Image (cartoon, rainbow, N blue to C red):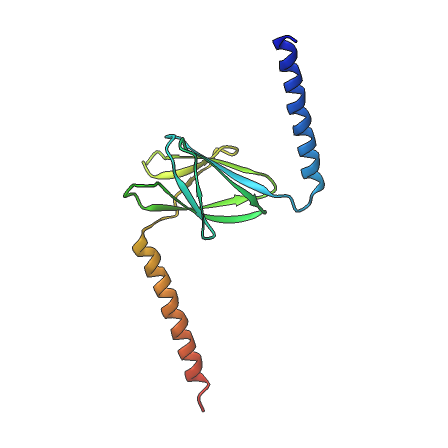
Length: 155
């Protein structure tokens, strides 16, 4: 067998898999999507989504699988750095989503949508103190609401 023949067979098999996968997804109304993120600086990073941590490869590639259509709040950070985690909101609607994690014109971290070329700036920075402060504030608010309701029901 020649190299050219082997290349044609591999190309044919790849195209057959692609066609089969596309047809299977089109027939499944509850199909899953993914978010793909690549770090432009080719450095490792992690994403926290719904209390689950996803770690990128050592050269900064990550896929978050099995996502339904909707809006997802991602917290992105870099291991072993003092840089605070950054918050982003990504939308999955009818297709997979791909992003490049990079610095914007102003030097702030953001996600460049690989399809639409829209740059999504970080919503805010999150530190451990912020996370504990938010959790503490939510507990305080819940306790206050319970106390207020109890006071309103007294005869």
